[in-house]
Image (cartoon, rainbow, N blue to C red; front, top):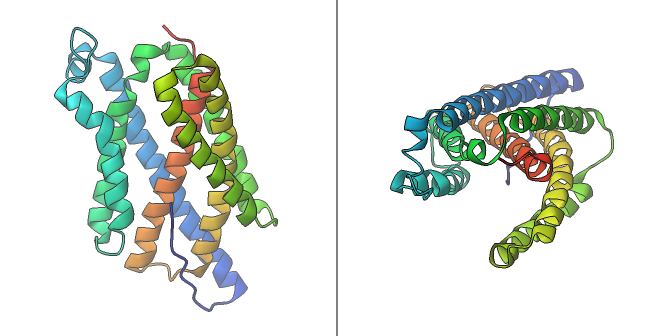
Length: 239
């Protein structure tokens, strides 16, 4: 997800302080969104009355089920392309609504995988994400070229997933999932480093900075979520 860079002249000490404050806000909103997603997914996945609003007795999606499945893409498009036109409160509201809708969409995993494997995979994804976030924040190595390679890998995964939608190959699905884990593990470090640099250049406290916080939270939220889902596809115990 493209996030614009804004640069302001300040001392190194001020730069470090602003960057830390910016990153703290990014992670706070990311964790808030993940909490909303997790709670909504749990209740919709474990409450029969709520699940029935998404899937009928024949196991087919209801109208709401289709809306929940595809609307997250619309949210991302609106948030991304409306960055310059949408005010901060509206952007924040869209982000929180997006996280709730994602929770409804992710509730389907409780129909496919055992609860134990879901919780275990979530813990594993959290550990991997945290480790790579630390690497991205502390490394002195420029990860720009590495990030470009990861984006190329992401495009490859999207293309391969589209092809496998027709082939329905278990072997190809395993390869896609394995590559997905590698790509989003790498993107986590890259995005954290990129956001750290952006945070060092923004004028914190302005609406632009506040909106960049939300965009950064969305980027890391998607990194974590995709890492979790690819790990679940690899190691999750199906019902």
